[in-house]
Image (cartoon, rainbow, N blue to C red):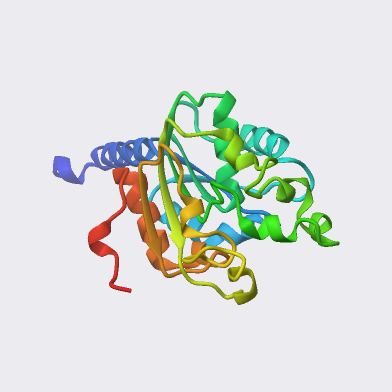
Length: 244
């Protein structure tokens, strides 16, 4: 029997391969996903699957978005989500809509030692005029809760109180709407809930607009591709943006 055929050598070879693959698995960065107002973690299942396939350790954190104010939602949801991230690994965030405001609020007063970057999809970073127009209509607060009332552009606007960011943030805005009535309340272009201008944020690293709607942008393959690119490169892939 030759050395290569020796069962002991084969076992050693398998052990080395297993060790290498285990080390690679343990080295994964953590990506925390935060959904938007009145949504569930299921709304981010497609992008979570794509990030898992790309080798990230994902934490898709559901939270009671219509039950509390932004301050409490941010503290509770992000603190718990961080506990599921591997110790000592980089922590990134991918957020939809109000989820981005939760991250801004949390990092306003706290630090994450291994913070990587944040990708926000359709965030109302300067609030939304839709909330300004509808907040006093009966049923609005019941449907959207205390946090929903904080997402306007006026004096009570939590997004405008938080201030600029000092960490890497990439923002994807949508330019298509499936709710034409709400779009009449917004400066164009908009995604049906937030204007492109109001997604922007002082201190942001990069910003792009894509022909997607607010409610479904997280399921768009081009959006998902740009999210993965930003997580890796800290900028968006402008060369791959299609001519729309």
